[in-house]
Image 1: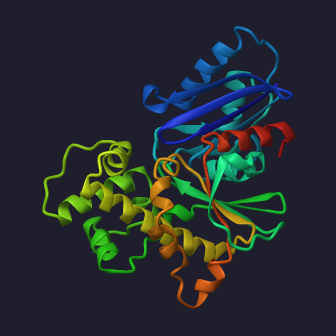
Image 2: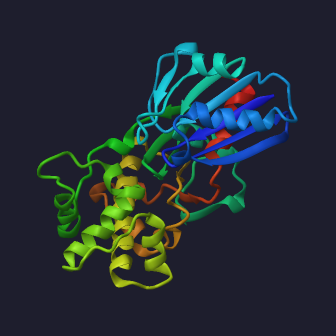
Image 3: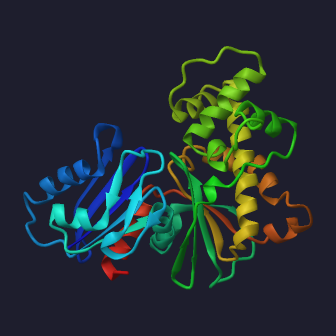
Length: 318
């Protein structure tokens, strides 16, 4: 029996399998728990009502950098710093034979091969190279980035690179976020909180009063369903920022096998990514515009791609 988990800032997905048979899969809202240990306790309690066998390998994907090796692996969830995971103590406390920690977007990269054609939408056809490096990136609570080449994943913290404005509006957004006083990262702009920041900036720019908007989904609903002009402007700005950042990362990695936009926000804002702004900014790379135009770009529709990647790692071991 194996166990996979995908632990983000907002939610955790867990699944147990025996061979190709799914035994149990659950989604947990992290605000309801004080620690990942508590989440795992609930999952295992339910699982062991029907399955008492040994979990031979568990892979836990964590939204944050991984330190150490073997049983000394440890990680802190970047956007939930009170959640600290240690491979050895998790194995000992929960009766797991082996626990491996991986970065959450490393797990997304590992999960790309498990995607069906219907689970992705092509934004740019490009000129794909069959064995080329593939890049997984995308916004959720944070902004994840990882690459996959020759079956090996390169984890990164590319979401924390500095945000680079390119015109008057993106510069004004940077200033609104305090860029003249502090470092503004890509994640500050392209993430769930980044979408809210884009909206609040647009309200500010139109000299409006910021409504009580606590969730990115409200901005998306106002933009796409209610046709609110400020929300639409914010969503279009977000899409342009996403395109600019994705294009910069494409230059860093040269993913000739394709770029895969994942994360919890991507599906919600897909209509905006299919507009002209995303690709215009993605390809606006001066003398390298022709190069990035050859790179395939896909939006991933499967929310559980990271969980699939974690299960794959657990199945074969690292």
